[in-house]
Structure formats: C-alpha cells, structure tokens
Image (cartoon, rainbow, N blue to C red; front, side, top):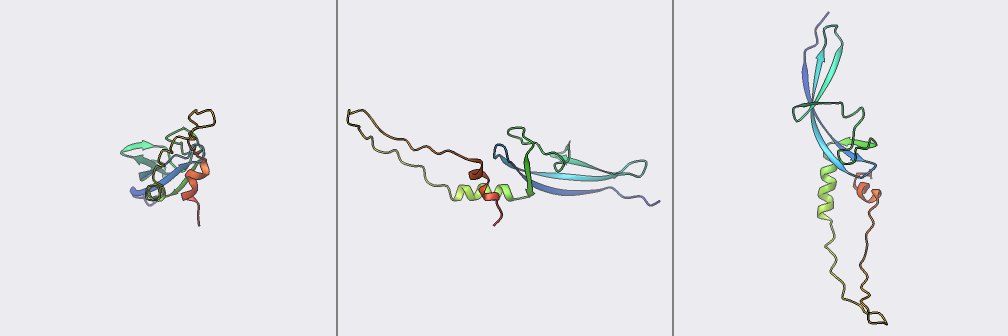
Length: 125
C-alpha cells in the first residue's frame, strides 16, 4: 500500500449572508492527512486556528445566519471598493420650508436599504 504524503493547500473564499447582507472574506490553510487506517481527511485552519469546513455549513459572522453564499475570493472586497468609488456625495440639508401655519415643514429624505441593494454587486452580468 502506498502512503499519501501530507500536503497543505491555501484557499480563500468570499461569503455573503443572504439574511443580513453582510459580506466577508477568509483565507484558509487546508491540510490533507491520512489516518492510521489509510483514510484521507482534511483539516481547515483560519489564522492558525482549526475551523470547520467553510463549504459544509458556513455561518454569518454578523447575524449567525446559515444562508450564506460562497464565492471566489475577491468578490466582497471588489464590491466594497466599487461601492466606495461610486458612493454619492452626502445630500445637503434642504432649506427650511414653512407651511401655511408658519411651522417648520422641512422634509428629510429617507433611504430604505433592501437586501437586493447590498447584494447587487454580486450578481453575475
């Protein structure tokens, strides 16, 4: 029986939570081992600590949700960079308007964020 040598591979993945929209990236060291009975097994390490496989059941670091999209590395950082570059300047404060009774009737614009707004950069074109 030939013996399989231990090897270590380096992989990185990008993650996006479908529940809260949080995105992050993580690099892993993937150690391939063979036990005493000849069965191969894999150990994942992130920042030197043993972690469960990110491919089996990823958990959102922000909300703890388990509906997480896994993508190739660089997707989250490129989306964040794109958002920074295309961010609109902050709106200026509108001049106060007075209603018929003389009360301040300034209307402040509201922006409601939707999950689709946050995940738009991840959609394939």
